[in-house]
Image (cartoon, rainbow, N blue to C red; front, top):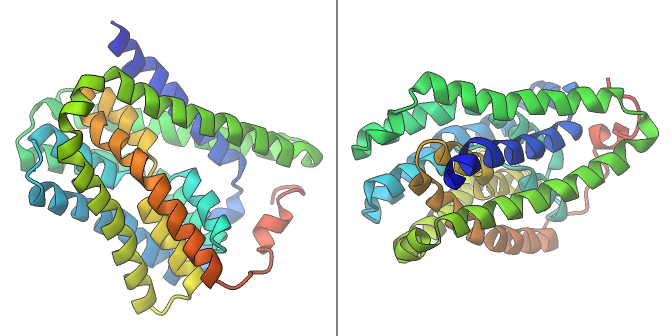
Length: 300
């Protein structure tokens, strides 16, 4: 009963709160950046929506993970970037506008990509339980706990008096971060025995996925002749996933699917933080981005 409440109520509510917070930081102008930086967004999204899930498939095979954990790893790999990636990109002197754009678009795309790769992973690794709710049910669930609160956050931002927007966003972000930590801790605690049982199997796999995703995405960005700040944003976006989404979707199907995302979360902040620190020493100081500078004022 308690696990059912966590899966059906606590996790979706927590994710919705985090997505509202992301919406509070966005304007329609953030989405219009696609037209202004098509190459950076294109390379970043190709990495996020294609390379990351394929890496998860490959690493699950490489480490011969049990079928349910393999599907959970694929679910994580298919999840969009998270708001923490935006913050780490800012600290790394990366292209924050590009990071926000990728997070926003990949969050919208998750309505398609998460159910798609969940289905492909279930078929590849022979896990039939993941399809019990039906793919339509997964699509609806992802839409309700991501797109609806994201849009609500953007709507609230437009209606909030300009002078108080930054304070509201700062407070909401603190609450969202605390919620994220609580969700990950709760997921680990709820499956404490299972996590301990499989942590030796998963530690190498999730760390390999994290490091490979950041390394490959950074290299591809440089091959595409993007500058270091843009490559930084793309690499962090690939390394710091919205693991809360993977946990929420996985828990609604079977608790075991949440374990890879929970273990991954323990690594991604350390590796992402170290990478951000290293790039902050390498990247030049960037002038304030026009969209970020305009945010205290009225939304477009």
